[in-house]
Amino acid sequence: MLPADLPDALRDALAAPLVDHHCHGVRRDELSRAQFELQITESDSPAPPGTTHFDTPLGAAIRRWCAPVLDLEPHAAPAVYLARRAELGAGEVNRRLLQAAGVVAFLVDTGLERPELLTAAEMGRHGGAAADEIIRIEQVEQDVAELADVAVDYMDSLAEELAARAARAVGMKTIIGYRCGLDFDPSRPSRGSVIAAANRRLSDPKERLDDPILLRHLLWTAVDVAHQRGLPLQFHTGFGDSDLDLHRANPSLMTGFIRALQPLGVPVILLHGYPFHRQAAYLAGIYPHVYVDVGLAMTHTAAGSPRVMDELLELAPFHKQMFSSDCYGVAETCHLGALYYRRSLAMALKSRIDAGEWSAADAARVVHMIGSANARRVYRL
Ligand SMILES: [Zn+2]
Image 1 (spheres, rainbow, N blue to C red):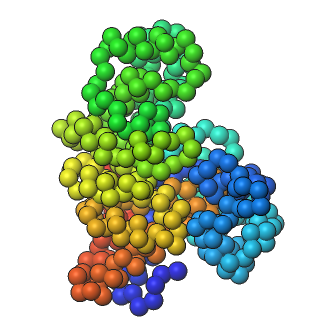
Image 2: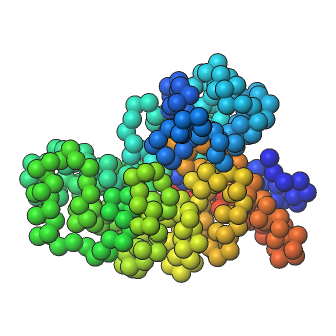
Image 3: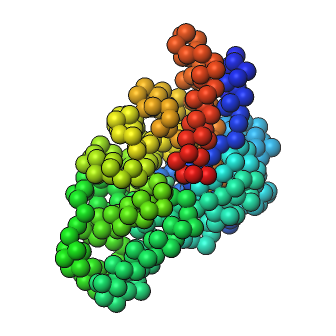
């Protein structure tokens, strides 16, 4: 799995258990081929007739690296792979692949409340790891909106509910990048504008929130809670599914908001990033409270992930990077997220050692920081 001829200190550091600071539950149910294929792509559409989502970097990676975990030869055909998966059953497949990732703690985004997904505690049990929760603030807002009658109740309940849920979590996450883009007005909205927007919202509370005033109000309310409790705030940035306007998910668009948060010291964690991971790396280098992660990109670029990792390492301070698998839906994405993280970091650091730029001891130290120590510090684990 790792390149040959690595110094022992670096190989040992790469093998150490990881803190997975951003992941989602994987499915507990048995999947048809069509369902599985939709879980291994960010697209919400089946592959065009006569083609398959296995013909992607991630699909090839599953056949190469997950097949052996299910006792198959590398490069097993998709039909053979899925037949073996069905034979073992979802529980056994989840246990094998989550444990193969070598994770010591999962920080699970529990914002997708779907019964077929493992809970945070179940992710821990299946993966032989500890588990903590990251709350998704837009999900909290949805729950509050559906129960509130008037705008003032809505505002009070939102603050109370965020604080109550944050008390049981190690961090918060926002998908404002999906809902209105990261080019939002960075200022805190006025109380009058929030009350007017809340009244409109409460007339149709089952709708998904996309009002920029209420999204900013939600975000700033979450910032207050994060500040009080010393919690970090994760942001979706970069690529994602078809709900996203990619050009509005560039993290440099939220530079004004990042500046506004600097005096509070609330850590801002830029998730995913790709193809804007260089902008994210820049922001992490400039602002003391900004951190960066390319977890989702490792899994989806797969054999191409060493280039992405190399681009992140060009500029991002090593104390600002964190590992995540960003697994979701199928446990293959957890194993591969960890595998390509370790592989691409190994290649990047080996090339620096071979070029005489770094010592092996420094490379091992940086691996420890990115793999677990930075997350333990920022999330206070
Ligand atoms: Zn994610």
